[in-house]
Image 1 (spheres, one colour):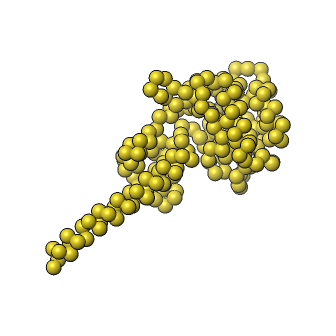
Image 2 (cartoon, rainbow, N blue to C red):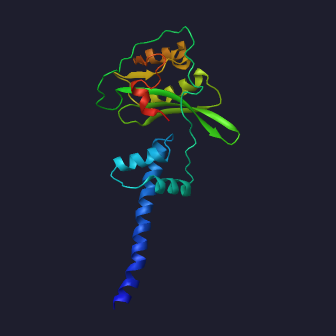
Image 3 (tube, rainbow, N blue to C red):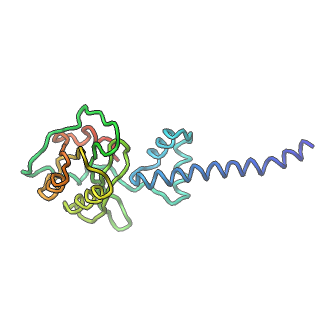
Amino acid sequence: MSSGRGSFHQPKDKLDKKIKEAGIKDKIATISREHPYYGYKRITAQLRRDKVIVNYKKVLKMMQEMGIQSRIKHKYVTTTNSKHHNKIYSNLIKDKEITGINQAWCADITYIRILNGFVYFAAIIDIYSRKIVGYAIGKTLSPKLAIAALSIAIVTRKTDNLIHHSDQGIQYTCKDYIKILRDNGIRISMSGKGNPYDNATALIIL
């Protein structure tokens, strides 16, 4: 009887394991869609915040099986050009408590390696939820890339009493970008020169 019972329960155990792994993969896919710049370590950390206990190696293996790869390289290599004479704005979010969405956004640009080179990824991230609210991909660091990401965010989110935080890059200080912020009543905030990891930008270091 015991051998028969064991043989009966073995397939169920395997089925339970597959169901559990499928659930984790579903959560990985959701996190990856909301945070396309996350690698396996950040996805693992988010899973743990969501009370899903799993190790890095397991998440990496699952991501590979799902075809999700971490291809985004570290920020602040060639994406920020602060050698300009445009107006620089004060940091409005230093020591400020963010208590909900659409109170403060952070703008950032990084790059993604592809088979024949790389492309630039501009994103607007809600500081409270840490979710991307607007993004654009392009082959150059033209201000148009940052403007495209900002325009999407403005269309999809409320901008009342909103602070926009960024570094001092030329994309965020150019007159066209500043005009869009002002036209939408968005307050402008920038991190200190030479300190790209200042405050909100640290949330999206890659």
